[in-house]
Length: 380
Image (tube, rainbow, N blue to C red; front, top):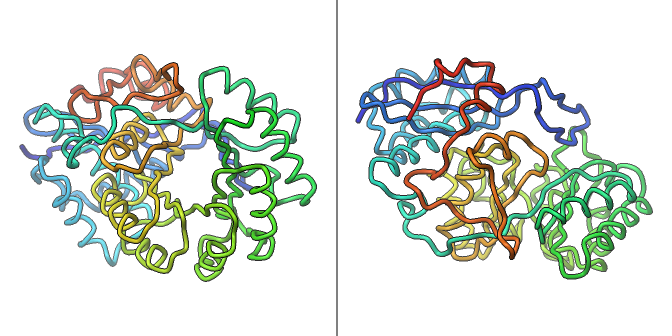
């Protein structure tokens, strides 16, 4: 079963804000779907956290390597692509694009074998997982209202990030956290993401340690990205000193980048993004490495319905991965999957058990957001 074509479909029009200092706009493209088509007409879908112009360029660079390859061997094919890209962009948009190809190949392998991806990864430890509602921070009162509204949707875990946190004053930071805890109640999980990968992040170790102590007073479950993504030694020291778990790793790509962080003990929780790191194949190896180094593996998932499906299958294949990220209010999550997503009465999300990624895309939504006529979309 050979790969004959790979198409890219950038998503435009309702791109959610990212909280960045140079804020993205609804018509900016930062999420791209890829469709891998085989000679037999089987189509697998993947997701890339990269602009579609960069994805299309990367696909052209990679084409001599993927065209005619065996679509039923995702790990080998993805590794081949990585190995031949040391000089042409390892770790950047090419690696992000390989992520989407790899996800799509796992989708194809599952469809052909009649198995959900999680089972192909070695087995399913769970049939459902707790999603945490991921949203941007705001001033205390509107944030509390937003959290209360999201809670009515059935979520019992919440992560708030970026916005004014760490950018105005310690007093505002605490007021934000206090309002959030009051809004969701004492029994809900509450996480804080400082957004240390924002451009020109200025807060250092001492700020992070003081803030971690404040967050612990409000029973915050973890403190995410409190430091610059390059501050390895500071992360190591913070993890040792902080009274709550320290999380990070969403900007790293490929397992080789994660290895020194995991071996040094920089994180309590590592958060690779399947749409960036090299796909399911690479993220599984990062998850294994995390286990071997006593670090919890919880995927980062600020992406699309296809990325969420991949995260759910990865969560099913790891015994301690009991949470996945769910962007609230994003049509690229809520509208791209046919039928959408539903939480059960316990605030849990079922892991798809149909073959492959186990979701069916809403063709009208894909066509609308990608600006591609339905007739031009590859059908499974």
